[in-house]
Image 1 (cartoon, one colour):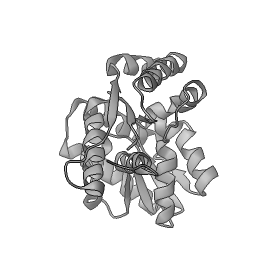
Image 2: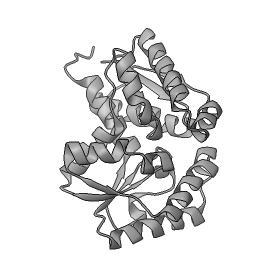
Image 3: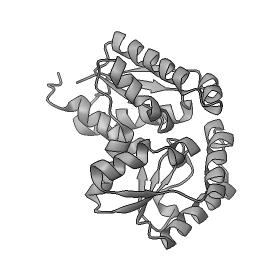
Image 4: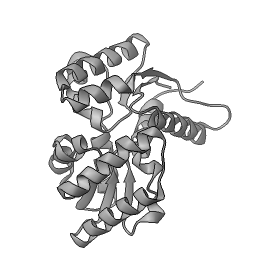
Amino acid sequence: MKKIGFIGGMSWESTQLYYKLINQKIREALGGFHSARCVIESVEFSEIHALQTVNDWNRLNEKMVEAATNLKNAKADVILICANTMHLCSEAITQNVDLPLIHIAEATGKEIQKSNLTKVLLLGTKFTMERDFFINILKSQFGIEAIIPVATDRDKVHDIIYKELVQGKIEDASRKTYVHIIEKAVQEGAQGVILGCTEIPLLISPNDVSIPTFNTTEIHAESAVEFALTTTVVN
């Protein structure tokens, strides 16, 4: 079994979901007492958030490369960035650290493609919705059009993530806000919705909306398990 390296702490609430999901899926696949071989490099989220706020992505790249290097030194075989937004630093990691990185947008694109959907709503932080790293991968590699909410709704989605979800607060009013935004997108032709922040599945479940949901945390975790078990003899 290959060793999975997590860059976590962004936030720790979502990182614990990765740890739980991956270990559950390893046990489902192998049975018995099996669990994942993994190592977590957990960053201090207040530092990351402060740099995001001032758009200092050069420094964020440095921090992510440092975290990935620590994972390599800990003998990880693959890297997972346990956050959608911080995939803005994925290129810096792959250019500077000689380990494979499972990109969350590529894993999600493969899953959407299985459902034969061509137009989806992308929800996440404003960085994820407004930068093109996620949208471009979906379009260029999978032919999937990703739409985003209008500016005022993007603000609402972003604020709920940072003011509530990363703080561990789950509010019913915020769930209703998200559902309203999703249903508006359905009227614009959205066939599915990407829960493109690792905290959003804490708030929104498939039963809350009328279209398929794509939980990037779960999809990413499944991709990591597949990688860990591929062409490996488990003793």
